[in-house]
Length: 135
Image (cartoon, rainbow, N blue to C red; front, side, top):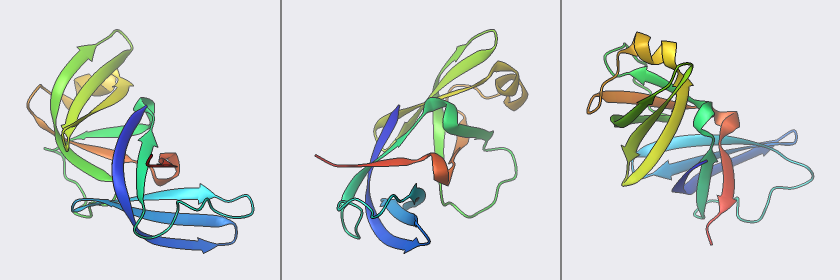
């Protein structure tokens, strides 16, 4: 599980769903929370939260590909390590002094032709980012 620390800058709740916007420096992320009756107390503007997301829930693109300029839920980073397997491959990326691990299909890795030191874009799906309070 990957973990990044950010700060909540906007919260919108309607129809049993809460959309939480988080900043890590200049990068912006959104997390979608399905509410039971109410949202946890730590989900409020100005609070620090941990963003948690699985290695298998990251989409990886080569920086060479055309990409939408909008940066929400995107991390522009460099490939630090590649462990190529028969079916799945593990990639490591450095972001804000934290290692992020992504697991993708080896055939996708071959298609992307990513190499260590090359720029890549990581895309996190809004509904796959979990939040927890910072202790």
